[in-house]
Image (cartoon, rainbow, N blue to C red):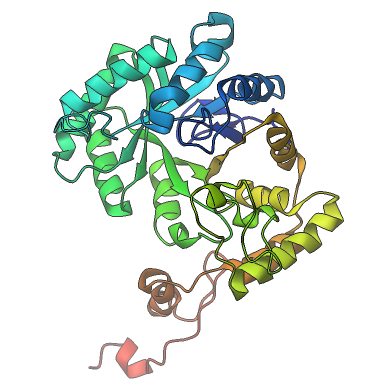
Amino acid sequence: MALTSYRTIGKSGLRVSPLCLGGMTLGDDWKWGATVRESENIIKRFIELGGNFIDTANIYTNGHSEKIIGDVAGKHSSVRTGMVIGTKFGGNTFTGNPNGGGSGAKAILDSVNQSLRRLQTDYIDLLWIHQWDWNTPMEETMRTLNNLVNSGKVRYIGISYAPAWKIAQAQTMAILKDWAPFVGLQVEYSLLERTIEDELVAMGSELGLGIAAWSPLKGGILSGKYSKENKGKVAGSRMDTNGRAANLGDKELTILHQLAQIAETHNTNEANIALAWVMSRPGVASTIIGARNNDQLEANCLAAGITLSETEITALNGLSTPPPTFVTAYRPYSQMFHHGGIEINGFKPPILPLTVDMVQGKY
């Protein structure tokens, strides 16, 4: 696999690169991103390497991220047509304005128009709900998004922070009403964050939502730069800028050790192995990476050329699988009631201790 091994996202024909350039580090307005010049160089180099997918949000670096993307890609038609530009709405950028954020019709339309202006384009390829708005009727949000797709201002829609049951409810409504459905699900996914596998990943597979995984290095913890020796502190890192240290417990250190061993086999670093693991996960269409300079970008993009063996994946899975929730834990037990000791679809659960009389309905 390489950066030019494009994938369709969800149940759609939209082709995206397996790595997506994240916009949170485009602009140094938040004190830990790239300067404007560095950001422009990063975007240009990402495109040169074959990347076509950029993700940002109306609130990233106070809107500056969108403006930088617009300066490089949005206003140049020859570049714009080859790019998949995604942005998110929902964050309130107008202090004191009750309709400045959320997922009401007024907030969505105002946010989209402002994003189009900053991105210097007349359409958004993939518009994401950033966080579910619990104060707005679902019908209003989904109807507004459908109208935006019908208008041509938006091509596809996706969703980020929301519980699986709410996303499933909204997706079912859209399908039944013949409205534009979600094609993307943007969630945190890494060797240190796998709780989404219980319901969100399975839901996405069933309902046609391809995953765009963010924080695949868990805020840099899986990059290999943090260790027991430096106590999770690296000068100049994002955590250091925010006055924090990486949380390095036994689990984190064990996974880092395994990543280092696998990285040596592939002649690469821990970060690329961690990225390759995320890209190998079922349902993942693209993995979002952040970069503050071209060196970081090019180093991370090498992950697209790494194929992990089943043995390596199994080793990493064994160290990172979280305790099951009730739904996951109960599944094999419930199948004992159905299978009757027979193997179905490759799974043969233990035989439930039912007597012949019980099976024949004596009781």
